[in-house]
Each structure stands twice: as structure tokens, then as C-alpha cells.
Amino acid sequence: MIKIEEKENIIYSVAEKELKDEDYERLIPLLQEKVKKYGMIRWYFEMRDFKGWSLSAMWKDLKFDAKNAENLEKIAMVGDKDWEEKLTQLMKPFTSADIKFFPLEQMPQAKEWIANP
Image (cartoon, rainbow, N blue to C red; front, side, top):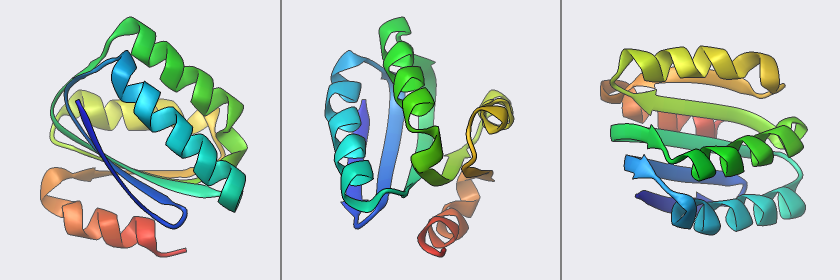
């Protein structure tokens, strides 16, 4: 399940449990709309009790990321699991975005970081 908020060129999302196709059917069009309107976007991705993606949802995520790598300015990954921090590091070679991991207790700092150019 995903909760999504937006403010100008920033997307704030909170993922819980497992992300599925229906989550990406809501998220991807919004991301595409923001890219079209602003060119560069920032993405705050918070993970709470996160279990990962269904295979088809992961595929949709990877396709968007690959197609729009140059449009992602910053990505704040916020979570509480070691594998989530490692995932952040794995993403770095595939995008020019400034990607940073924050533990959940640093959520305010992550929101401040993503909001500032």
C-alpha cells in the first residue's frame, strides 16, 4: 500500500507492507505528470513495515526509473531496515539523482533535505 502527497515538484510517498500493481497505477502517472510539468522532480520515499514489491510492481518501478533517470534530482529513502539502506546504495549507479538514506527517526531531516535545492 502506498500513500502519496505532492507539493510542486516533490512527491512524498509512504510505502507499507508490499507495493503492488495498483500502487504503481496511481504513482507512475503522477510522477510522469510532475516530470512533464517541472522537468526535474524530487522523491521522498518512506518505508514503514515495508516488505518490498510484487514482481510486476518492481518491473513498473524499474521501467520508470530507467526512462526518467535524468529527471530525478533528489531521492530521500527513509526506513528502518538494513536492506533498505543497502537498496539505496544499489540505486546510485543507475541515476544521476542525489540519493540519500535516512533512518525513520530522522524523517524530519529527510523532509527538510528533499525540500531544499
